[in-house]
Image (cartoon, rainbow, N blue to C red; front, top):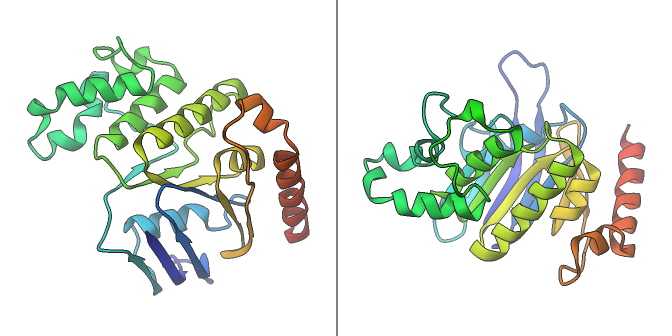
Length: 241
């Protein structure tokens, strides 16, 4: 559904490219992760795909025209004065369509486990709940591609696992593809169909975890496929240091 070809990008005050010669594709319905140390160019690639940045050279191409996409940032970025429901309705409010979408928004909140919290304000929510609101807001656009920039980085491990489970469930139900930025090897392996490892602005390796999604989550995380993928990625990252 998307092909990024030979992307180069540098910021005005940088003496080198932050992204250099990056090429990859994303197929319909799959989760692809960008994995690497801080500063390797992961988030910049995400912004190039989103169109928030323009590449110095290279191209992001879409099959059959540009697809609908939504962006979930590391910071939930909710409006503090607005209720949960109004935060989720924001994309449609900007188009003047909020009045006809309240039922859809309520259903979307139910899908991310926030039923009954529609009228709360962000300061009365936990960190995980705020991120669920952010994801619900992104899903209101009915994206074909969801872009996520380390959305669970600030959460504790147990809550992070729960959010990972929710994301996989939503993907299965709704069928969107995702480009997911993370610095967690375990999260990347558990979530992803494919993982691109980045170092110094380049994609250096590609790993396919091939987990069996028909078995329970705890069995996936203790499976030979999971252990093998984690070990392979850890060696590749160590080699790039």
